[in-house]
View 1: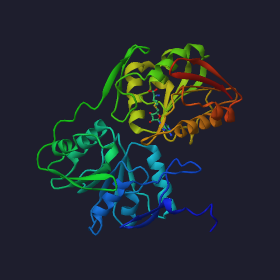
View 2: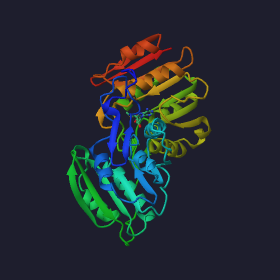
View 3: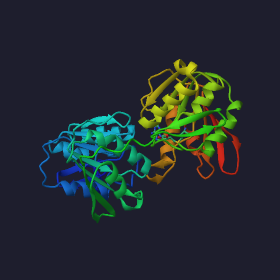
View 4: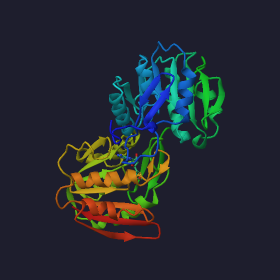
Length: 383
Ligand SMILES: C[S@@+](CC[C@H](N)C(=O)[O-])C[C@H]1O[C@@H](n2cnc3c(N)ncnc32)[C@H](O)[C@@H]1O
């Protein structure tokens, strides 16, 4: 095997259920980060030797580190996730390991009822965890076990309280690999009422209130970068087809539609909750423009099948999982360059410390800075 084809030790994940080749998605050329973490190891070690005859529900598995070993051991496994990137990672890793891909349910749909065992990677956002526990609780039979683990540096506070309230008696188990584990047993008690799962804020540029599910970016206030981008929209020419790429709650696309910047507009995001929030906001705020909109839940514009857009508007992500990283944004800009119509334009906002000029120079004929302030730059690039 050549050195290039050798997956190297950092992609081989040793578990009590066997060894798996696991890669991140998206993965850069020289990826330094593994596709699993201490919390995954802790959860799998806790299950070692257990007879897993019953179906297992896995929640928030980023790359298949939990679902694949269980599926390979013959356990019927369902992944409940918000992320199209996680779904792609799971599909790729299942294929690489010749393991049947576990079933998948998006976070905006209820998970299967009656599951006796849930494995949950604790998300950083407490509101998301609370939303997930509140959804899960009424679907779990009394006595069902929830095993939840997270990396110490990302754990929200008040976890015992949350597990006790929604699931039942819980204990904090051992810590290892810089991670901790909780075990909660579903009690007979009726779970508390679902907390208000939609956050909202009044968006001045739109003149309307925007609502967002818990895993959506900037759900309680208009992001300053987004606000600055909205201030520049009047500089752009109206087009036939536009995309709100990485749309979050849809704020940019909604303002574009309201100002007749496009006759047709696509809202795109990798988060199912973002897409659901954008759809809800469109229906509430611009009901007469619903027929002008389309929704695309996936990895940016990777699987774009619609006619080439004339304009892409974007406030790109600056994180990959928990890490600040402009790679996530640079990928989206390259995807925009690949699908835009000839002469089409990309207008994006970026923090001043993230310089996208080199990336734009690859896929675009021209670029200029449309506006800048102390914190942000607006780039306008033409194909
Ligand atoms: C900085 S937020 C911008 C959200 C919204 N446009 C705004 O201005 O409030 C970036 C968004 O990118 C999404 N995202 C991250 N990676 C993505 C990908 N590969 N494809 C599509 N969306 C992605 C995130 O879910 C998040 O909603």
